[in-house]
Length: 213
Image (cartoon, rainbow, N blue to C red; front, side):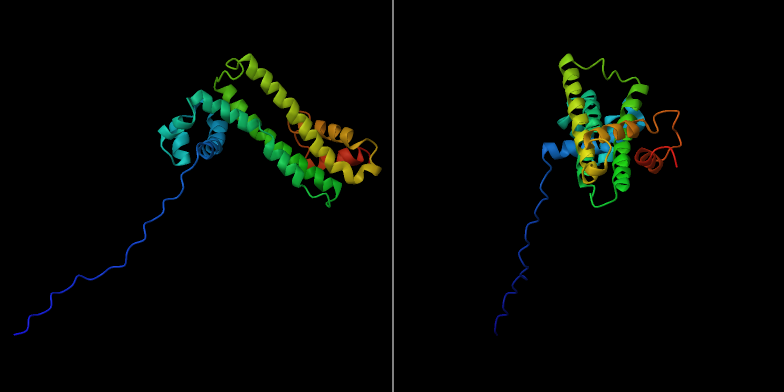
């Protein structure tokens, strides 16, 4: 009688080990937390909790404290981010100079107002909820903030002046001066009780053509 062959176990293809997604660096995690925290701070001020921020970011609260020493450091970083003009300057630099000047200035004014709105919402919300922003700042930090503001204002002025360059020969003022006057108009619109209903288009039209028809 012939012996039956011993059954062999079925072979299965070797599984390729899954690659884990690369983890975030500390700087990337910090950026993600700040982006998540900024609108929450604008809404809740200093009453926002790190647990709220962590939930919104989809991370554990402990992760927040691996990036920031405490809640105060996080709030200071949020304020600094809200005041950071980097994105505004990048947007101003991408405004197409082939557009009519009026369109360029409308886009610039809307960009600046969005930035000022975010900054005002964060600082105003923190102030209204009792966060001692300036009182907790060191003299060195205040000097650094002042220097940063001056540099930001100079960079913004230069970026807006560039928008006037194609019409340099038609301007009554040099582009730098025209930009300075325009920024004065743009920064006060909507922040003065005397001009609540002036639209950005009306502002630009008035700036370019004056009050007379």
